Image (cartoon, rainbow, N blue to C red):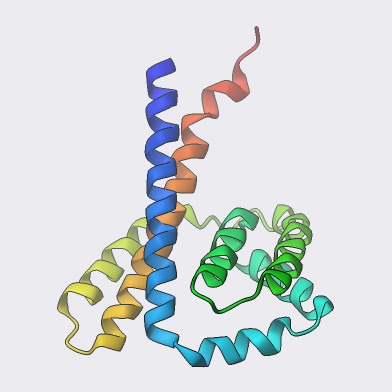
Length: 161
């Protein structure tokens, strides 16, 4: 049980971080200056940043994923640290909304996103389509990593010393 737990956590973390890297690189390549303008508008005031973070977290149901995406946008130079703080604060607020929406499970869509993202990335001729495939692939791998880590620690929830 211990080795499965460790390998599940390490493997899940690896998938999660690799998905974040793919997502960040794809976003930077496909959007360039356009997303910077949109993100600037959505996060120019702290209240707007909090609302944006809460909304994104409510939609994708993962404050961790929202935080990782936000960090990726900071790494890509698309958000400032000040803007990221308000988005992450909103992500934490959005977690409470996420707890209310339990019927929609993103891990069910991780493998289809990986498959579709790979096919688009592999077969597309235009760069913008390839980058979209990379973004979709990154999302899928990121959520698969989250699911893998969550599944790996599941036995600990039932453990009673």
